[in-house]
Amino acid sequence: MWKSIFLAAGIFSCLLGVEFLVIDSATILSNSENGGSQAFSPPDWAPWSFISVGAVLILNVVSGHHKSASE
Image 1 (tube, rainbow, N blue to C red):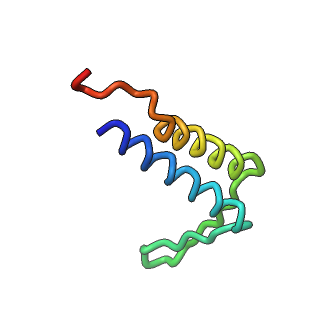
Image 2: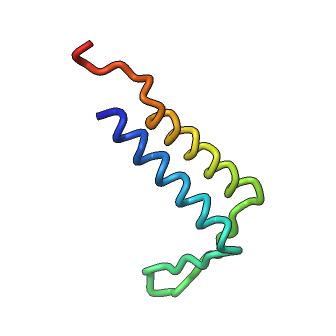
């Protein structure tokens, strides 16, 4: 079970990093009646950090050095 959780976290982190590479900023709209919105722009270090953390998590799961519960 832990392998699947770490694999999902690694894939999510890589996808988030790639998305941060593609976008410059995102506008977050509010559901309230006043119609306010906020602009979000990721910092310069965020894309590569998310991609590298995700890659380490995925490689850790794929490497197969984990002991199973039956051992």
